[in-house]
Image 1: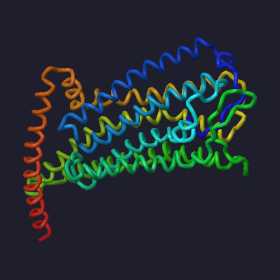
Image 2: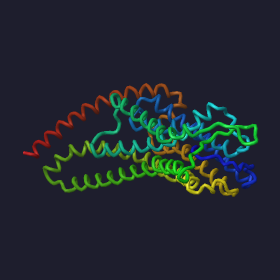
Image 3: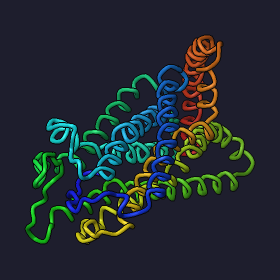
Image 4: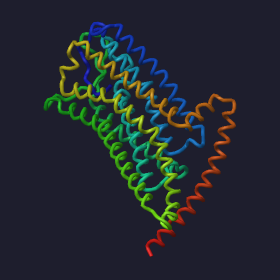
Length: 374
């Protein structure tokens, strides 16, 4: 967890709370991390290799899997290292300290905003009557949005830290420390502003946007159902064309919702302690200086929840998406190559059929709209 000044009251963590408790939490961390790394690698491989998995939503999910791998393979080890051996300083060198360490928390921003973009696209799918499975031309747009997610996350999370990080020899020690030094003016205003900005950027704002999209989608679906229930006679027959188009949209909406809802709930629950801990350290400087058992315990529990968040995401994909289950099983099947070739052929045929059907439906819907306006 970057952005926090180093606790120079370094003592052995075993002095602050039970070695048994710390070892137990670390063991659970490692188990979840191993499962998460394997699961997220499988997600990336499945989406990359299978033609029918390259939908816009799945491309965002692949980006989410990449951020989870970053958290599990980079953030998690460094976080454990920083709290488990504070008296040994930073042993990874000047370059990693000054140029890599400030950017580690970018993974968190890219993670939640990938989920947020899925929620926004799902909202657009319902409101603008578009199907959330476009390929080809939209692939460039999806890629651009993913790049933008990373750039904005870097600008908000990492850029403010680069001028502040120092690599210096610890007092009366042969070891070097690596940490940010925040200006002390206005009662550490910059550090407080940074902590609040992160809480807003990677927690409150994205969850707020997701909540609004859920509410608006629910309102739109209720309005649509009421509209169809009031249809009678010839109008009811004409509305069947609209229903067919809407049926496909709603199918995609339910598919996205099955995956999106547990992802959002898991993120909201597991990332809350980290944000609270950062705010506590910013507004109560004595909190991370107190020689209390609970400080290290709270830190370790926060890290555990972060690891759980990144590890459960691939489990959600597997449990909530038939496509992911089929794709993962195919990876370990002798028929995997055949299934991938078949998927490519079926996807091409399906796309051609859907394009023709959608064009016919659009033309008929336009004719009905013209008739109803006469």
